[in-house]
Amino acid sequence: MSISRSRLDRFLAKHTDYNKKSVRLLLAQKRVKVDGDLATSIEQIIDKFSVVSLDDIILQQNTAIYLMLHKPVGVVCATKDEQHKTVIDLLDHQDKASLHIVGRLDLNTSGLVLLTNDSRWSEALTLPESKVEKRYLVTLAKPITADYISAFAGGMHFAYEDIITKPAKLKIINEYQAQVRLVEGKYHQIKRMFGRFRNPVVALHRQAIGQLQLDPLLPEGQSRLLTEQEVADIF
Image (cartoon, rainbow, N blue to C red; front, side):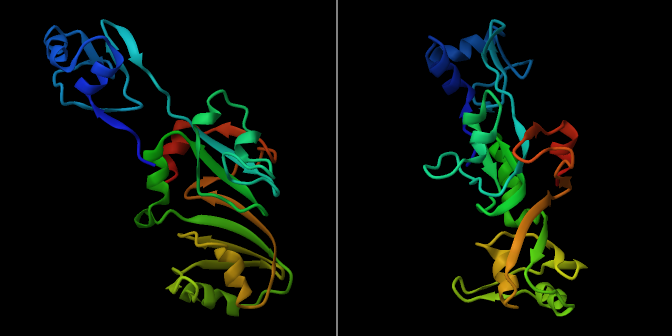
C-alpha cells in the first residue's frame, strides 16, 4: 500500500478553482507553500502528509498516526470481520478507519500489533530486505530440547511453498517455553516449525517488532500512540 503522491500543479487544480495553467502564476506570486516553504516548482511531488497552503489557507494537513496495540487471543487482525471482533474494533481513536495493520497475527496469537496510516513506514517494516526481527514467546505442549536450536537456525523446508525458511533464533527459557526470533513471517511459520518435532504450540505471544517492545504496562485490548523516538528507533 503506497502513499498517494502527486505533482503540485495537479493537487492544486484538484483542490482549488484554479486550473493547471493558472497554477504556475500562483507560484510566481509566492502564494503557495509546501511544509511551510514557498513552492517554486509546479512539478514538486507531494504526498498525503505534505502540508499545502494557498494564501496561508491550509488545503491539506494530515497527521501520521502510529499505534501499538496489545492484541488478545480471539481478536482477528482485519479491518472487518463478520464473526470475530477485529483489532480496529478495539481502537479508541477518531481516525481509526484510516489505519492499516502492520504485520498481522492470527486469531489465536496475542501480543504486539502495529497500526498506521503511513504506508511508507509499514512497507519499510515488512520488506524482506529490511530484515526487521520479530520476537515471540512460545509455550509448548511437550518439553523442548537443545535439538530445536540447531533445527531453527538451519532453516526448514516447507514443501507446500517449496521454500526454506530463513535462519531463526531459538532460546530455551524453560522446559515448555522458548523465545523465537524471526525476520520473516510465513503462514503459521512458528507452529509449523515446532510441528516438525510434533510438539503443538499451546500459546504464542509476540513480544517485539524490531527494537520496539510491547509496553508491559499496556493492558490486553488497549492501544497507545508511539512516541517519535519509538517510530524512528524501531529499525
